[in-house]
Amino acid sequence: QNDFEDTSLNPIGGDSQAAQIVLNAKTGGVRAVVGGRGTHQFRGYNRATQMRRQPGSTIKPIVDYAPALSRGFSYDSKLPNKQMSFGTNGYTPHNYNDYVSADVPMYQAIENSYNIPAVWLLDQMGVNVGYKAGIKAGLPLTTDDKNLSMAIGGLQKGVSPLQMAQAYTSFANGGVMSDVHFITKIVDATGKTVAEAKVKQKRLWSTKVANEMTQMMLGVYTNGTGVSADPSGYDVAGKTGTTEATSDESLNAATDSWAVAYTPDIVSVTWTGYDDNEVIPAYLSETAAPLVKTSLEQIIPNTAQTAFSVQSIETQQASSSSTSATAQSGIASNASSIASQIESNFSDGLTKAGDAVTNGASKVWSGLKSIFGN
Image (cartoon, rainbow, N blue to C red):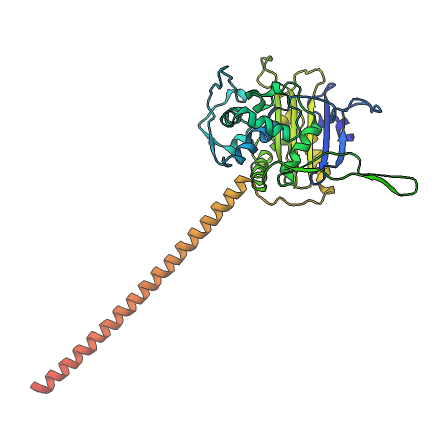
């Protein structure tokens, strides 16, 4: 809570608000929750659990990318990133600052939070695929959300940080989602356990799909939109999101800023913004990054610090390139050694052959001299 009141961790300033929830990824148990800034009110409004806001790009892994991997796409599948329209209504998504490019691999689309590839994927699979995935992940989607804007977080009612955190336990926990619960057990005055929570889980994705998603989302905090919130000394995967203020003339304008970060042990979801949708900066570094970074550096040391079983795509590629370079160097070295050996053997062979010829010639000459005399 002290971090939320620390003005140095709040670049937005003013009376902006923030909320955060941290879950045990394996059980769904709530480890920490902060419902907002300001004076605590008993049973007051808790933004972490009661708020409904547009999730922006944090929804993409749930309704776009994981379903796509489940249907044959791969982390390096090339996705279009040029301006285009979809459907009979001509829905036209835009990347931030109207950026376009040639086709991009899926992991780069996630790291840089491009909108066009996400919408294209949902259009290819069918809106109903993403809708069902969201419902299964516990998101409060309605039939009004069955449209392509869902691909980038355009929802009718929005979601809470708690609901997003629960959905992301599926990526942290090998494809299995853990239902959220606050009470672990109830003990009476005699020490007898009156009630105890039972861990409820549901498989959303295969282990392979969950691992590929984690590989891609590790890059969000090392190479993508979450770099400014990357906790020093720790590896986290996750996704950032903003709800752009399209009515504002400024390019750097949003109404919601999200940061989802997870390890194999915990899932943390942080939201910042104004209750009345006042405009905030669109860059995470200007909104929640200092708070997210600081809180993660305090939370992770108090967990089991379980290592990820996979590496980010870039780390994997760098490792592969290094191994390939080492192998090529070894091959070149072996080839050079073999060539030197051949050269040496050939030289020795020539020398011995020359000696043999010389000795043979000497014997012939001696024989001739013995026949014809000296």
